[in-house]
Image (cartoon, rainbow, N blue to C red; front, side):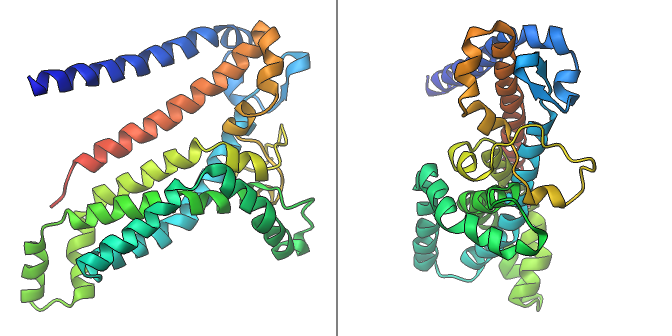
Length: 289
């Protein structure tokens, strides 16, 4: 009976997600008919001229999320190795609880701290490159790195602790040091769980709105000539979430095509974050132990 109810509620959740995707796809049909694939590849967004290109916002979301992951991954993985492999159980639980408290801080608080502290620090640090302000893609990425750190640490710690203790003891019995055991036994067997932690953190960073909204600058049509250029990191930008969280969403309500373009951004964001979450969850269920 319990299993039947579990399946039932799982199907309800899956059905609700499918319905949500269907509604977004139906509502965004006019912009797909109007723009075609240019909606995904277009570099310009001018709603008064009925020109809608989402690529700069997709680029902004990807850059901010990748900056956050590049900063949070080594710190988070290092903290997880320390808590899982070196700390005794009581201290491990205490440290993990303190780290997880960061996840409970409202995102608007992080955004305000970004305005008060991080924005000026980024501007002063890179003043030689003459940024227009501290509201940049880099600022948003650094702020997001702090926000996704609890996700990386928590799930990485769980992945490391899932490796059987008997294998650690066997490695130590063969003469390996603790560091060699971690590098040659624990990390290889936890790699799927660690990859899952990073993917879930990436999805979390792609979906963040308020904190990024306050420090990213919200400048449309900021697509660099070279996607691998580092200069755009010190310029204002726009992400999918900041566009959806701005005033243009209210402006679009009276124009069917404009509204379809806004809903289309929500569909793109839903597909990206949903795909990352499903992939991360699937990897997390598998074990190399």
